[in-house]
Image (cartoon, rainbow, N blue to C red):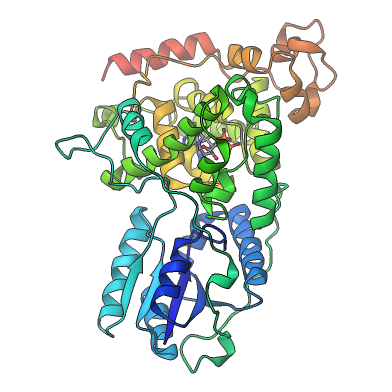
Amino acid sequence: ETAIVWFRRDLRVRDQPVFEAAAGRAQRALAVFVLDEKLLGPSGAARRTFLYRSLRDLDASLDGRLLVVRGDPAEAVPKLAGAVGASSVHVAADFGPYGRERDEAVEKALADRDVELVRTGSPYAVEPGKITKSDGDPYRVYTPFSREWGKRDKGAPADTDASTVDWMDPSEKKGGPRAVKVPDDESVEAELPTAGEQAAHDYWEAFVDEHLEDYDDLRDRPDRPGTSRMSVYLKYGVIHPRTLLAGVGGSGKGATSFRNELCFRDFYAAVLWFFPRSARENFDPKFDAMTYDGGKAAEERFRAWQEGCTGFPAIDAAMRQLRGEAWMHNRMRMAVASFLVKDLHLPWWRGARHFLDLLVDGDLPSNQHGWQWAAGTGTDAAPYFRVFNPVTQGERFDPQGDYVRRWVPELAGIEGKKVHQPWKLDEPPADYPAPIVDHKAERQEALERFNAL
Ligand code: FAD
């Protein structure tokens, strides 16, 4: 008896409950990944490249036994099940709007052949949908959700490795979709983090040793290497949050604060699960009547924001970090999002799309809801009238200006915190733009538009 293990967002061999489920059902299993144009198309070159590298690493862990095929999973997976005579296909459940529909289609097509789709676990510490208010209603606010999340048993990491399953050699497969090579890397402007499961564990252990203790104090500082950089590995399931929760240990301010952030990831996935339309629409429909800027001047400002040429050093540093690393510090994600919506009066979804084009950790629930939070249209108490000041954000969280100097070479010669207001210098650098808007005036404008709703 042969089973199929269909990898999607769980590109690892350690802490893999799916392996245990497959090994419990069959003597051996075929490892499969389906290159699905519907997911690859909107992914952006950084994410596609990181995915391909992760797949090559997974294939090496499986001794070259990962079968990669291309196509619509609802056709490819049932055909593969037929080709190897499988009676079960094992996956970790997916909860995004597309993944959910896709899995229902695959499940139906498999059922027609008497093959079962077996879901074991998920990419989250607590599965979306599992935490509700006592009347079954979803939480719309983070804090009560997190209280409930804190009480739930997340389970210990599963003790698995590649040898938990006896992997079938894909060349034994008779018929069905043909094997393709993992695509080559694409040309990516950004320097990407090292892909692969060992790299994820190495980064993680270094973070726990060097930064976890101070995480609560330094997590808001873009000028310091104080955060875990786990988002990209979590995105592709190269490491599971269970493993991270087990690694942070019990008490301590750093550990508590880190657990909170992982809880945010689960919260936004749960919100998107209950409200799938919130990927595209305002979570709070009151904002549907909001007016935005349009026309040539607005497009030019949008481009200046994208290119990191707004004349606000902290904003520009962050937008250039996004291009340079395909990643941006959380504090700066909030600042640039607020700037786009409240200083430039452009809709959050345009910024969210730009982020998803470039981020290597780009992930629908965290990104769309991070944007909605910053725009004031989303869950939680992020009132629209709280407008971030792009200068003081820089001065507070990049107090010596190191972050700006690292990412904005035109300002590299300006010492200390003066770098946050180059227009105040006797001789502002000629090759750096003046601020494209007057923050005070635009803040007032944003508040007036809000009050008109
Ligand atoms: P750490 O500080 O080490 O946090 C550990 C983990 O907790 C992260 O890896 C992440 O999984 C989770 N986490 C931390 N903060 C948040 C948060 N605010 N919301 C949800 N999860 C969180 N995160 C993404 O993974 N993908 C995105 O596309 C994304 N887009 C965002 C867009 C905006 C406008 C904002 C404000 C936030 C966004 N975030 C996104 C959340 C957060 O910025 C990143 O998860 C974080 O910066 C990743 O760096 P890290 O792994 O070093 O974080």
